[in-house]
Length: 268
Image 1: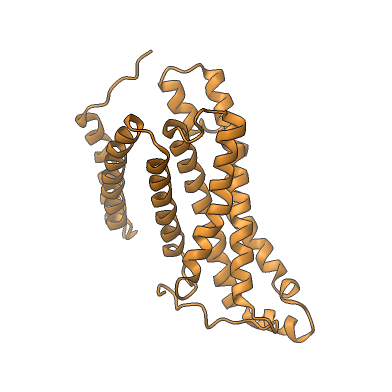
Image 2 (image 1 turned 120 degrees about the vertical axis):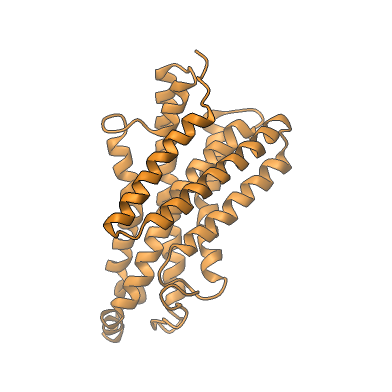
């Protein structure tokens, strides 16, 4: 079955619903209307642009082009992770940690999936590589940003407790263990909840897209199961890596808590 095309009118009707929600937010004093409209416009422009880019990429598939687009996605994701943190690390350290943790997780898991599990030839075929990487980066980005923001905020808020433990002879791992574990849970729980609700409460996006595109529901389910496992692994390893790297930055070689590397709320 061919996919039914959507007209500009169809998209406009959907956009009107968001506008009505923004008006409601304004009337109720929620303060979300500006962000809602800006995010909607930004999302539309970004998706239209990526649609044009992917059309060109699919017609001219090559490893350098796929690598370039993947690198751009990674760099933007790293910026988004840092932008969502209330107390971010000063300088370029926070950016390198966020991008590095996603390289370790998302890129590694995507490469493994393309070469071993999906087995597409060549492995960098953009119809497979870019969507897989995009889904992994998006979910890993959310997990890393949630965990990183919670870690830096809690370390600052509970600095007295952490320093007391250090004075009692605890190592930095022991003094910050409870905080780090809570932050890891914060970053991983959304993905775990998505896995638990998939197929019962919600039909995930990739599965829905394949079914709308005419694929067999069972084939769509198989791909969705693969994606959910990959997202869980990528997000989990990304969160673990980010928490470890940020924690090492917050303590010096003499087991002292160093908070002067953190910026003020809302500042780099």
